[in-house]
Length: 420
Image (cartoon, rainbow, N blue to C red; front, side, top):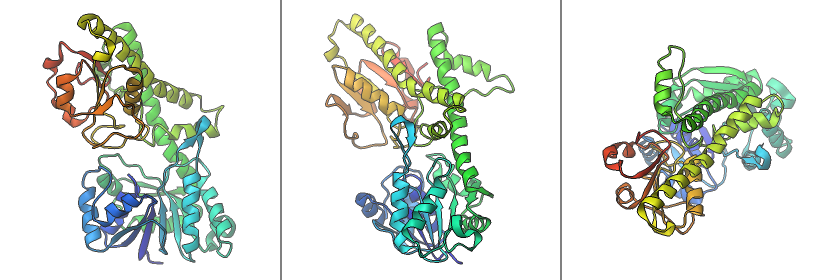
């Protein structure tokens, strides 16, 4: 069957670019999100997130009538679910949003439809989603019961894009296609080939789910090695940046750069899905998560030490000193604060510090709710002029222009090596 109408459930950092990619190929796309502000923004031809080139594609798609957003699912030929999959207490996977999305599309499903889960999920989530759909629509046959003769095809197809380059990588990168049957996989391939220039690599749904988790766990383990090195080097009086640069001259060594932790809704979350399902076997993956999760607390201790030095030198009271945190996003040059270690550090500093905590984040216009009253969003220039202790947390492009020589007399905590 042809895919004349495509619906994307969840219009966030992955869902909206995906919807825009289909719409750019002159396909009718219905985006669905419970956030009325996001829906209204998209229908104006604007975007509610920061992602290079996305604004132009969305504006054109809306103006040409190929993209429309709504708060309730409507009939379509293919449904892509791209909703959050956080974890609950004890780092247990929380599929509540996936369940809600599945139940919301169930009333409009018809024979011949394709449902794809894109949300990063624990192994078995696609099969669980299929069961939820089957419970809601007993009049339709699903792959877990009817195999290749199912009325509705179901697959798992995770994204593997880099924030800041989504509109390029969404089209260029290879795609893992995990259908519940071979027909499910084939139909999913046909759908993505509408815009995909990379290769569709077919497997089953459980392997595709594990592939996504494995990719992010691999990254997490390697980052944990760099972060652990930074702790060791600080204790030994060694520059971790110089050490890594020297070690990476070895032809088979490629150590990553340390930072204040690991953030984002993928690398900081996905490894726990593996640990939750394999608590005995996943020892290295668990340890890496613990190393990275503990790094923000180590950064806070470094800030406390620098403030103590500043107090001695300035003869001021703690309430009279200002700390400035540079960067809140989970990675450079984006506005995404999800699971951000920089945000966690800034929050802990603002909770602890008796004076003003200045927050410099060029990609947002207001602080998220819940920040202490003594924290304030300021410009880079204000922070450099007013703050006593400077904390580098995210190496945004704007921060790379800061004159390092002018900081020699300041109290610095540099988690990214920009001011070394």
